[in-house]
Amino acid sequence: MNMKDLKRLGFCGLMATASLTGMAQSLEKMQWFNEPAQWEIDGNTLLMDVTPQTDYWRISHYGFTVDDAPFLYTLRGGEFEVKVKISGDYQTRFDQSGLMLRIDHENYIKAGIEFVDGKYNLSTVVTHHTSDWSIIPLDKPVPFVWIKAVRRLDAVEIFYSFDDKEYTMMRNAWLQDNCPVMVGIMGACPDGNGFKARFEGFSIKHLPDLRRLQWLEKNSEGKE
Image (cartoon, rainbow, N blue to C red):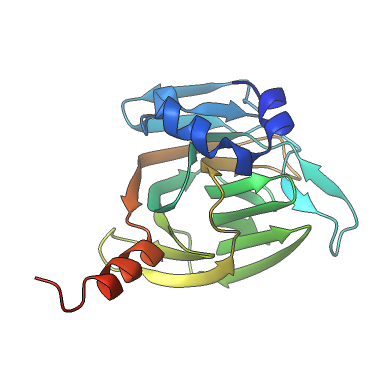
């Protein structure tokens, strides 16, 4: 199924299709949206030359909309946990890499590292028609960081970690539930001439639906 088919059907109408295709988590079986000129997959590691002058942003503050940065994704329905280890040769203002969850061009969340004014920042952009931006400045550059997103019902919690053991929440954002999302890894270079980004250990873990678990608990009370 190509992007024209996805636009024609709409992502919320793809629940049955996603279930039938059974898209794997391996990077080799994921799809590109805005494929970069140079990239390589080695096991469960993606090396990407991030395309220059690209980004994801809609309208607010700057007054323009861009939707052209490289994004390697798979379709995932229901509730899940996704994480990846990211690092990059950040050089120019707004160079960034991280995770993205995307329903369509007006509804997405991206989170990771963003290079601003010579400093590393933990960055999250949440877009529902218009984009907002929040950052957590870091005291010094870091060689890598793990970014994790947990989708539960209509909320996505974003976490970061420097050791893949202790995770700290950086954002809790709304995202429409009961609708499949494109989930994967992205890099963007709005101002510069591109940079090299590295993504390691990308994984997605299915989580049982909370509403169903609550229903089962309620309807099993008093039963042997």
